[in-house]
Structures are given as C-alpha cells and as structure tokens.
Length: 89
Image (cartoon, rainbow, N blue to C red; front, side, top):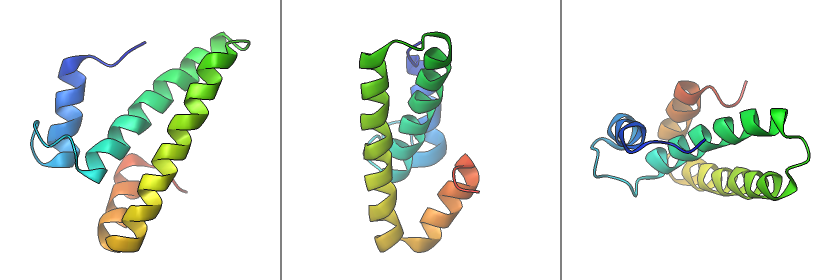
C-alpha cells in the first residue's frame, strides 16, 4: 500500500528535476497524486475504512492548496503539470 523508496526517487527525479529535490511543488503534487491513487484503490475494496478516508480527504486538500499556489505563481508550469499527471479534464 505504501510507496517504495525507489518509486519516490523516480517521482522526484521526474518532476523535481533531481532525486534529492523533494521540496519542489511539482514533486510534492506528483507524490500526493501517487498516494491518492493508491489509497483510492484501497478504499474501493475496504469501504468502511473511515480513518483512511479522512486521510485521503486531507491529502486531496493539500494537493489542491499546492496546485492553487502553483496556478497563481507559475501558470505555465501548472498547466504542464496537470497535463502530465492527467488531473483536470
């Protein structure tokens, strides 16, 4: 259910520019998206896992706040990121 170290480093390398660039907004959004997809699969099987559902909602809110910040400060990067992640249709 959790994301492995190797998967995290590839996400950070792909979206953050380097595997050590864990603080970039793009990398954080990509990691949150990966975790949200993983937890969504878990909740489809375990419908009554309400504590995990609450954690999922917190992650979705955090991703939304990061994307709003990015949209205000770097519109071209924001558009490229949501296109790459396939978030908004």
